[in-house]
Length: 101
Image (cartoon, rainbow, N blue to C red):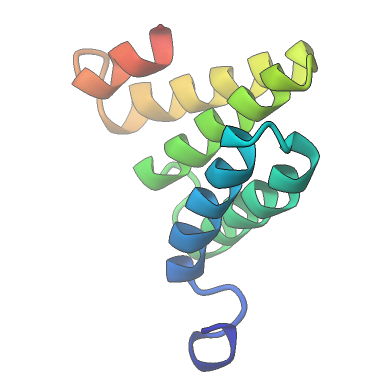
């Protein structure tokens, strides 16, 4: 897929993110990290900086950092996700509840 659509096509991020999730489900956190980092990098390059799709990757990476006991990084990512949500979706959007929990 990387050859036809290009290595940074936004669709590739939609596959990398669940792949990272499968590693996380198996508690293989170090193996999950490169996939979720790449998914986020692709989204940041291909989408607007405040695109709502980036929120999911930020939350996933924060969860991964939490599992690795790297709480400073996790908090920073969740704060960034919260800012994007507030700017793009509004404070009363249902997705805000997910981030605030």
